[in-house]
Image 1 (cartoon, rainbow, N blue to C red):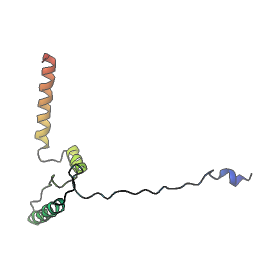
Image 2: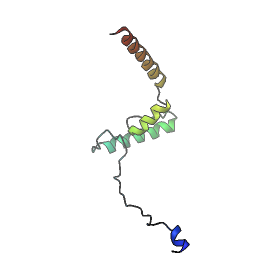
Image 3: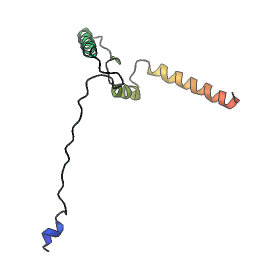
Image 4: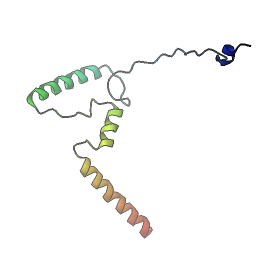
Length: 102
């Protein structure tokens, strides 16, 4: 055998063909009903108007689930500090109840 043949891979690299389903905008947990497109367009136009006025805010209603999760993980929600303190209080109460045996 030649030296080149020994260095060559024993089989050719191939890529498999895959196809994916195109997902529409919106929440993955909400069904893609017919009124969803109009709702998204209405909220989008409202956001554009608010943006021109300088009052635009993030709307969780039209965001995807993954966008909502990322926003929550980053702590960028409007009431994130209130939510965190509430969860801490609930955790403390649950720990106290468990400690008391209730």
